[in-house]
Structure formats: structure tokens, C-alpha cells
Image 1 (tube, rainbow, N blue to C red):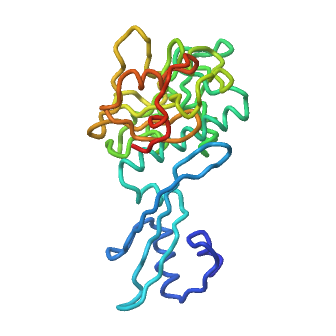
Image 2 (cartoon, rainbow, N blue to C red):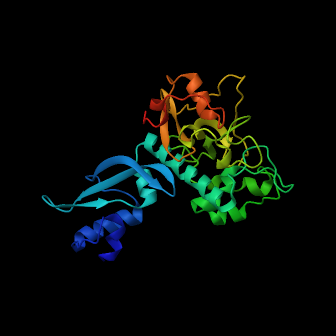
Image 3 (cartoon, rainbow, N blue to C red):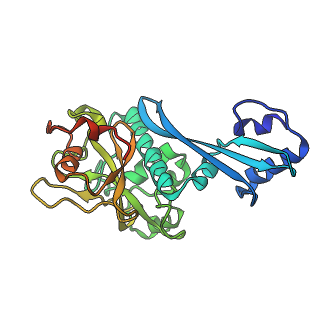
Length: 285
């Protein structure tokens, strides 16, 4: 009994049977008692060489009129459900960014973006390519990489969209994604071998992923094209006043619409040596 509660607390703590029964119900159903109190704490951490946001979620559950117990929640799916929508979206971006780097560690390149074929096969979205790195190996193996994304076989997989790709404010049955990379000259994904060695600007000030409200099925190899001589693409659309974005070092921030356009353009490019104000690089807006 004590060992089973270990993942919810800082250390093994003996509890009475009633408290354990409450814990077991929450763990099995991922539903909280009505009188549960949730405490959020946020900060920065470093994992696998990446800078990531960390949320500590403590759940206080009453076990009697004057008694209760506080759990440190470590269950990933429950944690993501408890976070507010904006934090869940940032959590999604961090999971995806981490998967990009795991892919890079495994194959020395980031997954390919839209429009690039590999070994003569149909273009495949990076969202499919990183499935093994977000614990979706079985889904990856069922995707037929010899067929286009919208073939009869592959379209059947749309309904199995991983939760990290669907925006937390989207419809529960939506098969669209809200997370994209930027493609085009001077972006990270401007060729057929995107990698960290090509990021000559600081990785902490080079965009890897952005949040955008678009009708794009998650398996479709479609991202956001960028060109220095064209208007800035429209990002966001989910939250008032800006959008969430992940940088190449793994950290995720909310970028306000008030951020100067030249700074956003500097964030997009990987090797143009634009001057980005120090306060704009790592601030948590």
C-alpha cells in the first residue's frame, strides 16, 4: 500500500486505509473529489540539456472534518488535466520540444518539416516522426510511411491524435493540431537536414515551435512558411494578446502581440545575428 502511493509524494509516507482509498480512486479515475484543493508552484528546471518550465502540483484531499492529506502529483496525464489551459498549452509545447531533441540525439537531425521527402517516400509530418519519442511507438508503426498522409489507411489514424498535439481549448474530438514549426530561408527548418549545428544565433532566442489556431489535421505535413520580405505570419488565436512559443533550447514562453515585429523576426531566424534585447530573450512574459 505504501509503495503504491510513492509516485504521488516526495517520499514514502505511511497513510491510513481511508486516505489510500481516496488516492487509489483518484489514480484510477483521474477525477478529483469536489472538496479537493489544488496548489500550483512554477519554476525553471534543466533536463537533458534543455531549459524547461516545471509545475509542482500539490493536491490536498480531506479525509475527515479536521483531517486531510496532501499529495505531490507526478502522474503526467493527471498533471496536464489539472493545469490551466494556457499552462497546458505550454506543457504541450515543452513535451514536443523535448521530443525534437530526443529525435536529434538519436539521428543527429531534427525531424523534417513540410514538403521534404526522404528516400523517395511521401512527405511525412514531423508530428508523425516524433511519435516514438512521446511514447507513441505503436501508433508510429501503424502509420504507413509508403503512403501519403491522407491515404485511406492513414486517414483512419487521425482520430488517434496524441493529446499533446490538440490544443487544450480545442474541441475534444478535434483532429487538428495547433503546434507548428516555421519553414523557409533562415529558419531552423530551411533544408532537408535541420540540426542544432546550423543555429548560429543563441538557441535561447531562436524559435523552434509556435502555437497557432489553424485547421490542420495533425498528420498533414503542413507548417507555417516564413520569408523576410513577406508579412509576418499570424500566430496564436487561442489566447487574447499573444501566443505561446518554444525556443530551440527547450524553454517555452508567452509572446505578447505588443512585442516588436523586428524582435519576432529575429527570433525566427537561426543565423542572421540580429540583435535581440537581453530582456527579450528569457523573460517569462
